[in-house]
Length: 363
Ligand SMILES: Cc1cc2nc3c(=O)[nH]c(=O)nc-3n(C[C@H](O)[C@H](O)[C@H](O)COP(=O)(O)OP(=O)(O)OC[C@H]3O[C@@H](n4cnc5c(N)ncnc54)[C@H](O)[C@@H]3O)c2cc1C
Image (cartoon, rainbow, N blue to C red; front, top):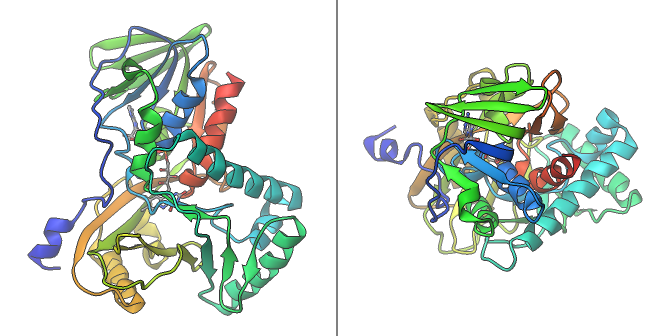
């Protein structure tokens, strides 16, 4: 990789939220949310308007984590096809997951209240990378239609007309902007949590906070605070090209069981991500630097799509994977007053708003 490419390494494409929310750990809070990604701001949004003091703390800045580094696909369901999900979870559960993620799409966009978040409901396409995947997608079309979902096998791809895309960092900013400014505090790293019968004691540097309830919206980073929570940090990598003079991608495309994905913005840039399956073991890491091997795959994929000219951004982010493939939402076992809202397994933009609603309502 040449020096030009080196300078692009690690810079996400999306612009972080422009507002700054400096602050310290409060001495007291009814609810303390840890983590300023889509899950954290969604929690705060759902808690607003209640007669409780809810404060969100983020160690860096809003959307610093996966929420500011992802592809911005708003897809129904999980990474696996509907046919696989039916086998894994059962028909009822699979249907519920698809319904919740469809609702997540609608409710999250409504919650942005007309702010510009780059939303386009232009559908998505799942392109099979093998005969096995093709058969699963053909079967999925049938099952999805039977269960009342819009999906169409067009002979090459499974088209999901209800799906869409956003600018994920703008989405985080749009929710945060509606909150009381002092309820968000950036630059606060929680280093310890002690669960007690009547609340939770948190530590950040020399500061301490007595909170009634804590919610871990720390996705991949959750085990760093509470090691008993089973979430596997998993790196995902992307690149973005300079604006292309012509359309080379029509809708957000997902392929090879979710291991490959690409889209083209209205402004012409092509975003390509994935190829983690080429080196699964090395991507189970908290290291969020892009690697040469995967970036070369992404380069080839971008060229294969017909994208020309320079690559302007190369970056990686850390996803949080659960064993079931579904988010963890609710009380942490053995830790009274500590809740988790995390483990979105590569689909947090599709899940987090509604998952946060459920957790906020259960408190
Ligand atoms: C390259 C890539 C592509 C992806 N593409 C998509 C996609 O197209 N569609 C989709 O739905 N999902 C996608 N995902 C997954 C999606 O980005 C995540 O599921 C989602 O952003 C998780 O949001 P979150 O708020 O739970 O976590 P994060 O956004 O990671 O936020 C967690 C925050 O917690 C903070 N934090 C951690 N520990 C502490 C602490 N001790 N004290 C204070 N703060 C702390 C971190 O700094 C971080 O900002 C992708 C992910 C990646 C990396």
